[in-house]
Amino acid sequence: MPARSPRVLAALATAAVRNLDVVAAGPAEDDGADFDVALAVGADGTRYVVRAPRRAAAAAALDAEVELLTGLHGLHDPLPFAVPSVAGTLALPDGGRCVVHPELPGHPLDPGTLRPGPGLAASLGTGLAALHQIDGSVFSEAGVPVYDAEEYRRRRLSELDRAAGTGHVPPRLLTRWEALMEDVTHWRFAATPVHGDLVGEHVRTDGAAVTGVTGWVDAKIADPADDFAWLAVGADPDALESVLEAYAHALPEPPDPDLLLRARLAGELALARWLLLGLRIEDPEIVEDARRMLDELAAHADATPLG
Image (tube, rainbow, N blue to C red; front, side):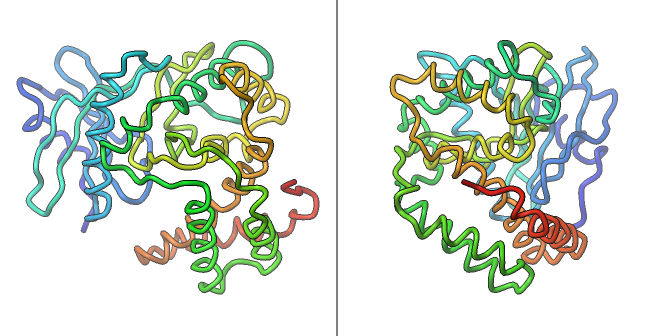
């Protein structure tokens, strides 16, 4: 379907949220290829994020996210950062619903600017530890996917097979990834609640600490390494080490020894998923972008070993 403009999304927001008077609307941070997203400003100055799914699968994921957010707000021990609080929803004529929530405090976190030591890096590690220790029933009751370690490894292998079938992934990358996925000794982890799509625009910060986390549509019970993937490929190694130190310190038991290895793998596989998405929605620009990044990764693979 054609993308909905910020003006159209603002109109949906006024119908979804009682007494909301939108005085301005504009684009928001991109939320991928599955959602139309806008930022609407109410008469009282409150800034709202408005999201509407473009496809049926995205609509189902957004419904599960709404349920999960309700559960997260009901936690006995709240997370050390804010999560979206749904202000209203509106059923859409073509299926799914529009969801509106106040914008979280802070600004997006660029992993490349993260510095080692106490402060933001430590706040991020502590926050991830808190997330990964949530009672799994909060996630499962929201209807998000649930995997154990072996199921998730096989899911990754299936993803690799689909990527290989496109003919667009350099063979050296396929060999690199398959070797790690076939070695079951790297996949002995305790599945935990994970965000599943941590990237800079989903993590908010005031510069000193993590203030909020948004974009929960890919939440699941799976590999905790997934939530470190964006840092494994985008952060300074010393900064990543500070995050991991704070994370380990906040856990009752040490994380599994292969967490960082799988995080690096997940970061690289994100390019294959980007390729598969582009092919699925028939977007040649996404396909070309993914192919370019995969070729660049293959060219530097020898200099950036996963293990």
